[in-house]
Amino acid sequence: MVENTLRILLTELGSVRIRCLGCQGVAEVPTNDLVAHFRRDCCPFCSKPFSDPPKLAMQALGDLQSAYLAAQELAENLSVEFSVKLSN
Ligand SMILES: [Zn+2]
Image 1 (cartoon, rainbow, N blue to C red):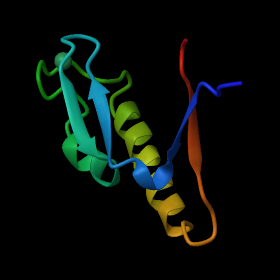
Image 2: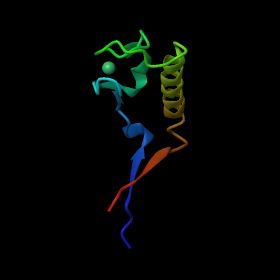
Image 3: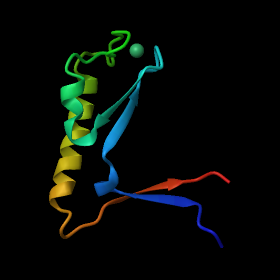
Image 4: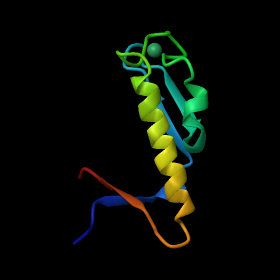
C-alpha cells in the first residue's frame, strides 16, 4: 500500500505563504519573522484589514511565530512533523 501523506519537518518550514482573500496577493515570509512583515495588520497589497477587531491577525501570526521558534529550540530532543494528506 502506498502512503499518500507528505510529512514535513518543522525544521523544513523556512517560510509561510500568506494570501489575502480580498485581492489574492501572496506574500512569502520567513517563518521566524512573520510579525515583522505584517506590522500594520492589513494586506500589504490592497490595505484590506486582516482582522476585526484589529490586531487579532497580528496576535495569531505572532503566536504562530512564537510556537515555531519554541519548537525549534526543542529540536535536539524532539522532532515535530506536519502530515499533509495528498489527494489521489
Ligand atoms: Zn489584499
